[in-house]
Amino acid sequence: MSEWDAIGFVISSKYRIAVFTVLTEGPATTTEIAEAEELSPSHVSRALGRLRSRSLVELIVPEEQRKNRQYDLTDKGEQTWSTINTAGLTSDT
Image (cartoon, helix red, strand yellow):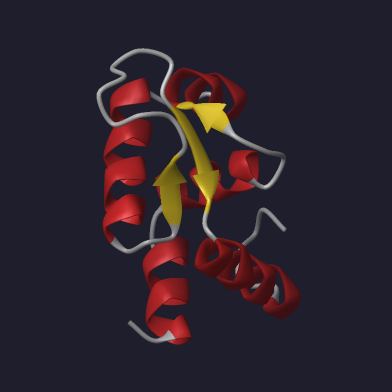
């Protein structure tokens, strides 16, 4: 996936933007992201899964852990978010 494909993927969803907004502050759980952005945890969970599948977000606890799963941005995710912010591609920036 090119950087512009990743950027388009992120900015096409308010849920993916919300995940990035929170994770730029550091690792967080699905619940923490949902509460910080006033969103449904199920939508946040789905966004996290899709971002993980594109290597933009990573799970930073063991895969077997089912509660309080912490997520963080990958290097690719940080670079993508930096480009999004620099270019002013979201209204949240």
